[in-house]
Image (cartoon, rainbow, N blue to C red):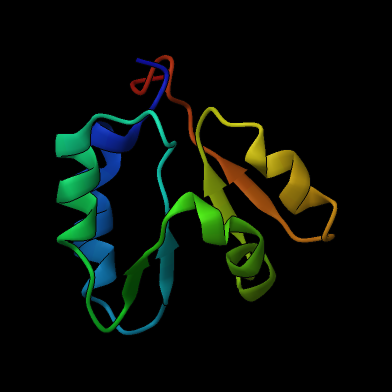
Length: 93
């Protein structure tokens, strides 16, 4: 899989418990259902999971995007906001 969703899950879970950031999280619509359900279960005070029909709204709310392998980051860059890409092909590199 080109997605790093499974690789970053535990770290995002840990970070979402810290109060210094608000996380807006979505996954590719073709992501495995069990992965989507895991991420949805992380919802709390600091993390909101949203479906793809709200992507534009959430892009405007976000200050920065963390992205793996998706074309959505190109749309985000048009808002003149920073994008951090995750090395998902060789996470050990």
